[in-house]
Image (cartoon, rainbow, N blue to C red; front, side, top):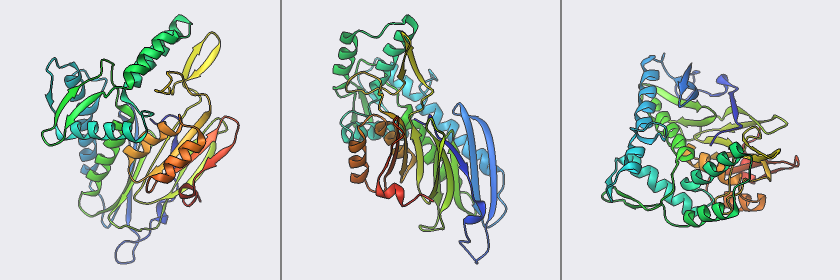
Length: 328
């Protein structure tokens, strides 16, 4: 979930030659709307890039949106959720989304949960009624969130919905779309590296394992503090906008809700994550906005290739060693 992240690509010349000791051609495309936001695509190639690459990236995004969208009533996700059948034969992409979602619910002990949409709906109603949700309503949702939301038979790709709650996979699905689309761009012709940014969800991917780091600038938090990071074959995501939330009886509540309690979090301004792929960065940006700072650092340190940066409401900054290694 990318809320407060504004990402700028800083140094096209810093990506040094990957062949023949010559600078690569650099092409940049800006396009909107893509997934309801803007897309920035940067391509390094040994030769001039044909603009059909942009068309192929957009086609891939549209293809995946027809599978993952929670807004399109005809998407495969919504078709499954609305199906009266006990089980549903899912596409590879939808089964992958469910597999990842189940894995993250387990890894985070329910801090990430697609059923949190039910709690969001209660708080949206609370804002309209100017009344804090009843504790019993929140507790009922929290109890249901503790149950497995679906069953997936990985070998047959058969899905069974187990939760009565409305499910929303946006935080995970958007990251997967960025990962897939970036790979499509890299697979074209003589492309050597790609930087894809869709509304702040950013993925860098290269044919080489250790090219010179590409610099990006991240704007985060109330103070609009900026982070300059050097990344390569990595993703960056952020969560925790102070500008989104619910106003109830003159009190402001964050739009980020803890599935374990049903209450919006109030301890964080923003969380920024570096990870090997965008789906991981996306999920963890939300998770780190919910966990206590020490819990976020412990989880980040337990996962390979994950950096965590927290800007707390008090102005205090926390980050783990892996994140600090990428600061410039």
